Image (cartoon, rainbow, N blue to C red; front, side, top):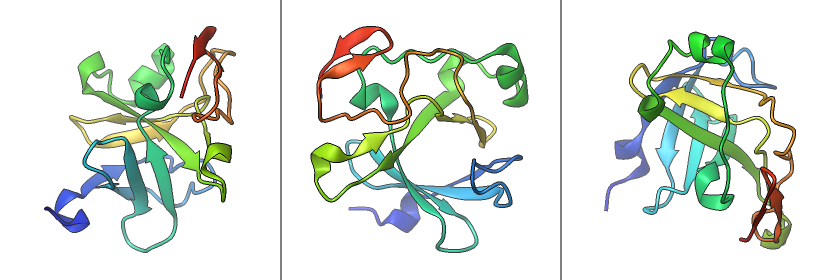
Length: 143
């Protein structure tokens, strides 16, 4: 089994991430072999370290659309070069944990640059509960 250090990927965020605008470089660490849960950690210190998940794995029907300006900021990547991650807040009771689908972190995998965006779609919640049946993107979804 590979260690987390062997699985690290450095991602540059020119504008930082909301709440951490002064931190420009993060390391993406694989946390599980299913590639659903990751850690996005500041490259030069232990804080912040955010739990991020693949939103497509936790919310069926998730289909974010970037604006032209957002695509331009990411270097106009091909769709297959984009990686979407959503910040997850883990609560004491796992079923109360939430995922931010409204403001995903979007990474241009080819350039290893990223940004956090606010989607124009109104159907995506800031506090999506992946362990509860609810609506997402106008569709009924299940955990």
